[in-house]
Image 1 (cartoon, rainbow, N blue to C red):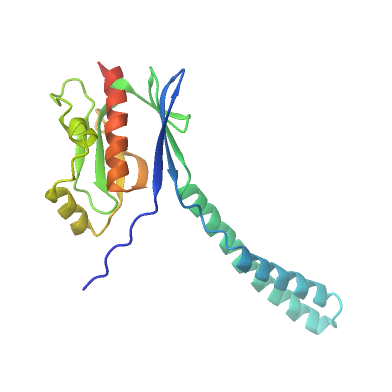
Image 2 (image 1 turned 120 degrees about the vertical axis):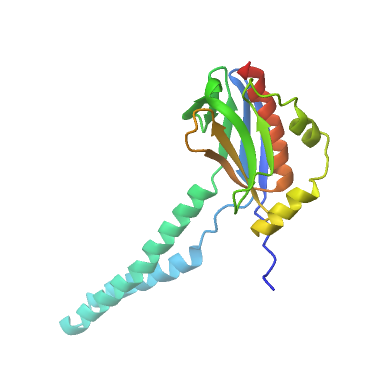
Length: 209
């Protein structure tokens, strides 16, 4: 029997109102683990071996220098792992302006190009909720009203997440021109993903008409 999937790390979603428009900030509740102890041990070993090689005879000094180089390898690997975790778990800023949706203040997706926002499981491709932004769609705010009303996710949604083997969801933006979808936020819980989808879709739709 496969083990139950572990819950995703908490992602806190907050809203800020600025002169340019609404800004949604998705912040991971758990930062990257800093493996200070391992870095310190490997660094001290490398420094000790280098210092010892300066005092030892030549044939021993070469061996100590070689061992110091081996100690430097895990230090570099740990730094790469830490940097990748920092990038993956960084906060994401989603701003709704008159021009379009901005991501981290740099990338912008114009309102006329946004088709919908969709929640997917972290694993698998079956959509859980779709909020249409395209004005030509007869969406009727149904998804947002259900989510804002605090309704429990239907059994089909829970079954889809269980089938995918995950408890986390990702928020995806689809564009009208059929180009590749944009993953806006990963690692949301179902409840925080529903809240972000409802609030962000409502803000985008107000500018899309």
